[in-house]
Image 1 (cartoon, helix red, strand yellow):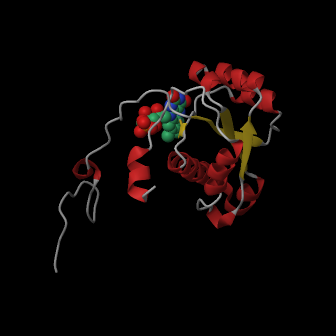
Image 2: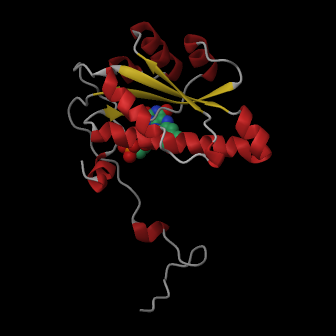
Image 3: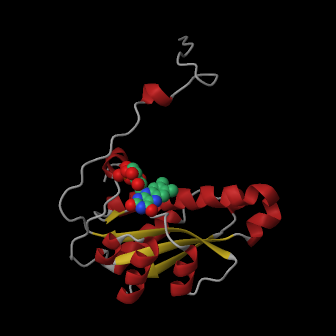
Length: 180
Ligand SMILES: Cc1cc2nc3c(=O)[nH]c(=O)nc-3n(C[C@H](O)[C@H](O)[C@H](O)COP(=O)(O)O)c2cc1C
């Protein structure tokens, strides 16, 4: 799909049909996530592809998001930050979050490109998710990404107008000095 179309089409989908998803398509989206920028190119991210129905139900409970049970798969994005901490000390935590977000967005865009639907879930009990998936204490859970085919049609959320968020040369300055 054309890039701008993918970006426009991406939206959080919370209704999934029962149509099966080929797990190899999910692997393609995870592979795309690996192309995200990473501070110092430190490979802090880990991905758990969850297909076990009981575990997906557990993730739905851990996040109190019932729609998750309708997803064909869930991808749980984790960060292992020991190397980032060694290199970047007090900035490591922020970098870890940034690069997880960049990777998640790559995943979401590739999902759209493949005709799939997903939703970034950031609200969950870390402890419960870690328990279900046997994630070690020193690893952070960044997001749960359910994946499936959309059921029905979801109204697109309104986004900011460019002129309300864009400044030139200094904060709040809305005018650009333009010379040819
Ligand atoms: C950091 C982050 C956390 C989010 N957590 C949740 C969540 O826990 N549950 C949920 O349903 N959506 C969650 N979302 C999705 C947002 O609600 C959604 O992106 C927003 O409403 C804009 O809609 P859109 O994605 O369709 O453009 C999260 C998004 C981000 C970026």
